[in-house]
Amino acid sequence: MKRWQGRRFSLMTFVIRDRKIIDTLKIMTKQGFTLLELLLVISIILAIISLIIGLVLISLNITRKIHCANNLRQIYLATKIYEEEFGAPPWFPKHFVTWKPEYASLLICLSDPYQGNLLKDIHDPKAFIPHSYFFNYWNDYHFVRLPRKNIHGPKEFTEKMLKQFWYELTAPDGHWFVCPWHSLAVFPDGRVGRARRYTGADFENPENKLR
Ligand SMILES: [Zn+2]
Image (tube, rainbow, N blue to C red; front, side):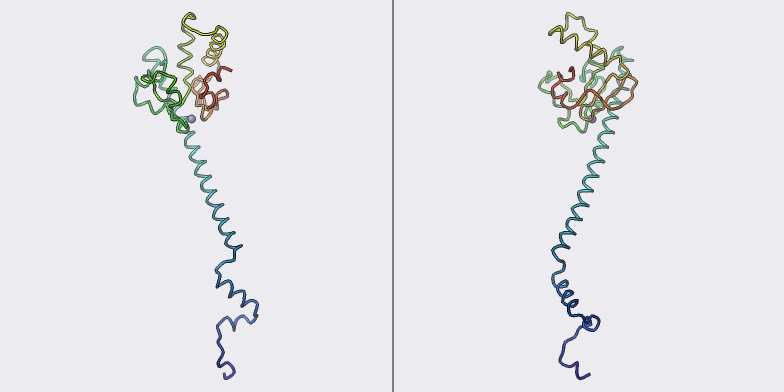
Protein backbone atom coordinates (compact mmCIF):
# COMPACT_ATOMS: atom_id res chain seq x y z
CA MET A 1 0.00 0.00 0.00
CA LYS A 2 3.01 2.25 0.46
CA ARG A 3 3.55 3.00 -3.19
CA TRP A 4 0.08 4.65 -3.48
CA GLN A 5 0.73 7.09 -0.70
CA GLY A 6 1.01 10.80 -1.52
CA ARG A 7 -0.87 10.45 -4.81
CA ARG A 8 -4.42 11.55 -5.47
CA PHE A 9 -6.73 9.06 -7.10
CA SER A 10 -10.25 8.99 -8.25
CA LEU A 11 -12.40 6.00 -9.04
CA MET A 12 -12.00 6.89 -12.75
CA THR A 13 -8.26 6.35 -12.57
CA PHE A 14 -8.81 2.74 -11.60
CA VAL A 15 -11.50 2.06 -14.16
CA ILE A 16 -10.03 3.90 -17.15
CA ARG A 17 -6.31 3.68 -17.52
CA ASP A 18 -6.13 5.40 -20.90
CA ARG A 19 -4.89 8.94 -20.39
CA LYS A 20 -6.64 10.31 -23.56
CA ILE A 21 -10.06 9.07 -22.47
CA ILE A 22 -9.59 10.57 -19.03
CA ASP A 23 -8.62 13.93 -20.60
CA THR A 24 -11.64 13.91 -22.87
CA LEU A 25 -13.96 13.05 -19.99
CA LYS A 26 -12.44 15.87 -17.95
CA ILE A 27 -13.05 18.38 -20.79
CA MET A 28 -16.63 17.17 -21.26
CA THR A 29 -17.49 17.41 -17.59
CA LYS A 30 -15.86 20.84 -17.37
CA GLN A 31 -17.58 22.37 -20.46
CA GLY A 32 -20.90 20.50 -20.20
CA PHE A 33 -21.48 20.28 -23.98
CA THR A 34 -19.36 20.94 -27.02
CA LEU A 35 -20.52 23.71 -29.40
CA LEU A 36 -21.60 21.14 -31.99
CA GLU A 37 -23.76 19.28 -29.48
CA LEU A 38 -25.32 22.55 -28.33
CA LEU A 39 -26.16 23.59 -31.91
CA LEU A 40 -27.62 20.18 -32.60
CA VAL A 41 -29.87 20.36 -29.53
CA ILE A 42 -30.99 23.92 -30.40
CA SER A 43 -31.77 22.99 -34.02
CA ILE A 44 -33.79 19.94 -32.89
CA ILE A 45 -35.76 22.09 -30.44
CA LEU A 46 -36.40 24.74 -33.14
CA ALA A 47 -37.53 22.06 -35.59
CA ILE A 48 -39.98 20.66 -33.01
CA ILE A 49 -41.33 24.15 -32.21
CA SER A 50 -41.85 25.02 -35.89
CA LEU A 51 -43.58 21.68 -36.43
CA ILE A 52 -45.95 22.35 -33.53
CA ILE A 53 -46.69 25.93 -34.74
CA GLY A 54 -47.31 24.59 -38.25
CA LEU A 55 -49.72 21.94 -36.98
CA VAL A 56 -51.59 24.49 -34.82
CA LEU A 57 -51.92 26.89 -37.79
CA ILE A 58 -53.14 24.10 -40.09
CA SER A 59 -55.75 22.95 -37.58
CA LEU A 60 -56.82 26.58 -37.00
CA ASN A 61 -57.27 27.10 -40.76
CA ILE A 62 -59.24 23.86 -41.08
CA THR A 63 -61.47 24.92 -38.15
CA ARG A 64 -62.08 28.32 -39.80
CA LYS A 65 -62.91 26.73 -43.13
CA ILE A 66 -65.40 24.32 -41.51
CA HIS A 67 -66.94 27.28 -39.65
CA CYS A 68 -67.20 29.19 -42.94
CA ALA A 69 -68.80 26.27 -44.81
CA ASN A 70 -71.29 25.98 -41.95
CA ASN A 71 -72.10 29.72 -42.21
CA LEU A 72 -72.76 29.37 -45.95
CA ARG A 73 -74.99 26.35 -45.41
CA GLN A 74 -76.93 28.17 -42.67
CA ILE A 75 -77.40 31.22 -44.93
CA TYR A 76 -78.76 28.92 -47.64
CA LEU A 77 -81.23 27.24 -45.25
CA ALA A 78 -82.29 30.55 -43.67
CA THR A 79 -82.89 32.00 -47.15
CA LYS A 80 -85.33 29.13 -47.86
CA ILE A 81 -87.28 30.02 -44.70
CA TYR A 82 -87.15 33.72 -45.58
CA GLU A 83 -88.57 32.94 -49.03
CA GLU A 84 -91.40 30.93 -47.49
CA GLU A 85 -92.26 33.88 -45.25
CA PHE A 86 -91.91 36.74 -47.73
CA GLY A 87 -92.21 35.07 -51.15
CA ALA A 88 -88.73 36.21 -52.24
CA PRO A 89 -85.18 36.16 -50.87
CA PRO A 90 -83.76 39.25 -49.12
CA TRP A 91 -82.24 41.99 -51.28
CA PHE A 92 -79.34 42.93 -49.03
CA PRO A 93 -77.75 41.80 -45.76
CA LYS A 94 -79.69 44.51 -43.92
CA HIS A 95 -83.02 42.79 -44.81
CA PHE A 96 -81.67 39.45 -43.64
CA VAL A 97 -80.38 40.81 -40.32
CA THR A 98 -83.47 42.97 -39.70
CA TRP A 99 -85.48 39.75 -40.05
CA LYS A 100 -83.25 37.75 -37.63
CA PRO A 101 -80.67 39.92 -35.79
CA GLU A 102 -79.07 36.79 -34.29
CA TYR A 103 -77.99 35.78 -37.84
CA ALA A 104 -75.59 38.75 -38.15
CA SER A 105 -72.64 36.55 -37.11
CA LEU A 106 -73.43 34.11 -39.96
CA LEU A 107 -72.38 36.80 -42.42
CA ILE A 108 -68.76 36.95 -41.19
CA CYS A 109 -66.00 34.56 -42.27
CA LEU A 110 -63.33 34.14 -39.57
CA SER A 111 -60.60 34.25 -42.23
CA ASP A 112 -61.82 37.56 -43.71
CA PRO A 113 -58.98 40.01 -42.90
CA TYR A 114 -61.49 42.90 -42.98
CA GLN A 115 -64.07 41.06 -40.83
CA GLY A 116 -66.86 42.11 -43.19
CA ASN A 117 -66.02 45.81 -43.27
CA LEU A 118 -64.30 45.98 -46.65
CA LEU A 119 -67.20 47.62 -48.50
CA LYS A 120 -68.12 49.98 -45.71
CA ASP A 121 -67.24 53.15 -47.60
CA ILE A 122 -69.04 52.11 -50.78
CA HIS A 123 -72.45 51.37 -49.23
CA ASP A 124 -74.76 53.68 -47.36
CA PRO A 125 -73.04 53.66 -43.91
CA LYS A 126 -76.37 53.66 -42.06
CA ALA A 127 -77.68 50.59 -43.86
CA PHE A 128 -74.36 48.76 -43.87
CA ILE A 129 -74.21 45.33 -42.26
CA PRO A 130 -70.70 43.79 -42.11
CA HIS A 131 -70.49 40.78 -44.40
CA SER A 132 -67.70 38.63 -45.84
CA TYR A 133 -69.67 36.84 -48.57
CA PHE A 134 -71.11 37.40 -52.03
CA PHE A 135 -74.89 36.96 -51.87
CA ASN A 136 -75.33 36.34 -55.59
CA TYR A 137 -78.67 34.61 -55.14
CA TRP A 138 -80.21 37.52 -53.23
CA ASN A 139 -78.89 40.29 -55.48
CA ASP A 140 -79.31 38.47 -58.77
CA TYR A 141 -82.84 37.28 -58.00
CA HIS A 142 -84.03 40.86 -57.62
CA PHE A 143 -81.75 42.41 -60.19
CA VAL A 144 -82.90 40.24 -63.13
CA ARG A 145 -86.52 41.15 -62.28
CA LEU A 146 -85.89 44.91 -62.46
CA PRO A 147 -87.40 46.70 -65.44
CA ARG A 148 -84.57 47.38 -67.91
CA LYS A 149 -85.28 51.10 -67.83
CA ASN A 150 -84.37 51.09 -64.13
CA ILE A 151 -80.93 49.61 -64.82
CA HIS A 152 -78.50 52.40 -65.54
CA GLY A 153 -75.10 52.14 -67.18
CA PRO A 154 -73.63 51.13 -70.57
CA LYS A 155 -75.93 48.66 -72.39
CA GLU A 156 -73.11 46.23 -73.19
CA PHE A 157 -72.04 46.05 -69.56
CA THR A 158 -75.65 45.59 -68.38
CA GLU A 159 -76.22 42.71 -70.83
CA LYS A 160 -73.02 40.99 -69.72
CA MET A 161 -74.00 41.43 -66.08
CA LEU A 162 -77.54 40.08 -66.61
CA LYS A 163 -76.17 37.04 -68.47
CA GLN A 164 -73.83 36.33 -65.58
CA PHE A 165 -76.67 36.77 -63.04
CA TRP A 166 -78.98 34.38 -64.91
CA TYR A 167 -76.22 31.82 -65.04
CA GLU A 168 -75.57 32.05 -61.28
CA LEU A 169 -79.28 31.71 -60.55
CA THR A 170 -80.16 28.80 -62.85
CA ALA A 171 -77.07 26.73 -63.70
CA PRO A 172 -76.46 23.59 -61.59
CA ASP A 173 -73.04 25.00 -60.65
CA GLY A 174 -74.38 28.53 -60.12
CA HIS A 175 -72.62 30.15 -57.18
CA TRP A 176 -75.49 31.26 -54.95
CA PHE A 177 -73.40 32.30 -51.98
CA VAL A 178 -69.62 32.62 -52.05
CA CYS A 179 -66.78 33.05 -49.57
CA PRO A 180 -64.03 34.72 -51.60
CA TRP A 181 -61.55 34.23 -48.74
CA HIS A 182 -61.93 30.44 -48.74
CA SER A 183 -63.11 30.08 -52.36
CA LEU A 184 -66.15 28.20 -51.09
CA ALA A 185 -69.57 28.34 -52.75
CA VAL A 186 -73.10 27.12 -52.12
CA PHE A 187 -74.71 25.67 -55.25
CA PRO A 188 -78.47 25.72 -56.01
CA ASP A 189 -78.94 22.23 -54.50
CA GLY A 190 -77.50 23.42 -51.15
CA ARG A 191 -74.20 21.66 -51.60
CA VAL A 192 -71.11 23.54 -50.35
CA GLY A 193 -67.99 23.14 -52.50
CA ARG A 194 -65.04 24.84 -54.07
CA ALA A 195 -65.89 28.14 -55.79
CA ARG A 196 -64.43 28.30 -59.27
CA ARG A 197 -64.98 31.90 -60.19
CA TYR A 198 -64.33 34.11 -57.19
CA THR A 199 -61.31 35.10 -55.11
CA GLY A 200 -60.60 37.65 -52.39
CA ALA A 201 -59.32 40.01 -55.13
CA ASP A 202 -62.84 40.02 -56.65
CA PHE A 203 -64.23 41.28 -53.39
CA GLU A 204 -61.65 44.05 -53.28
CA ASN A 205 -62.64 45.00 -56.82
CA PRO A 206 -66.24 43.76 -57.42
CA GLU A 207 -66.07 44.49 -61.18
CA ASN A 208 -63.56 41.65 -61.53
CA LYS A 209 -66.25 39.03 -61.02
CA LEU A 210 -67.90 40.06 -64.28
CA ARG A 211 -64.87 39.18 -66.36
ZN1 LIG B 1 -64.63 31.85 -45.53
